[in-house]
Image (cartoon, rainbow, N blue to C red; front, top):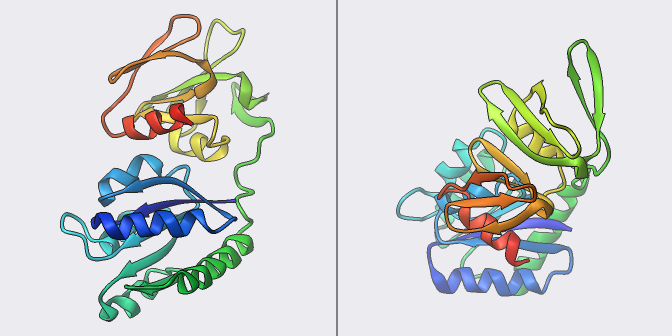
Length: 230
C-alpha cells in the first residue's frame, strides 16, 4: 500500500483527487490538504505527494524543493509550462488538469513502479530497533516505546517497565521514519508518541497511561486527530 497526501488549494480539484485515490486499490490517502504548510505533519508517514504546483502561499514546486528528503512526487497543474521544471526535481509524473481517471491511473501505476524499485516501503520494518549507547548496543521492540523526547542531538526514549529513559545520539525524525507510521506519530517538534498509550487528549496536550502529559503543537494537531479518529 502506498500512503499518499493530496495537496491542492482548489476544493473541487482536491475532492476529485480524493475520489480518484479511493478507486485505486494500492493507494491509501492519509491526508488532504489545501496548502503545502498543512501537509508538513504528514510527511513522515507519506510515501508520495500528489501536489498542485500553482498555489497562492507556497507553490508546490517550491514546497518540494524545500524538502531535504521528499517522498515520491506527482505534480498536478493546469499549466503545461511547468512540466519540464517538474521533472528537474525528479518528480515521478506530471498530470495536466483536467485529467481523467484513466490518466490518473496510468500515472499511479508509474508511481507504483518507482515505489517498488525503491523498496516498496521496506525502510519502515516492524522489528527490533538497535541503538548504540554507553559502548554497547541495545535492542528494543517498537511496542515497548511509550514516547520519545528530543534533546538537541540526543533522544530520550521512554520504555515500558523502565524508570529511566534510554538516552541515545539519534534524531526524532530518523526514529519516526523507522517506526510503523500507523502506530507512532510526532505530536510536537520535540515529542513522538506510541498512539496506543494515549488515554486522554485535548487541543493542546495528550495524557498517556501512567499519567504522563505531553504537549501537542498546532503544526502536528491535525495529523494526531486524524490518527485518533482512525
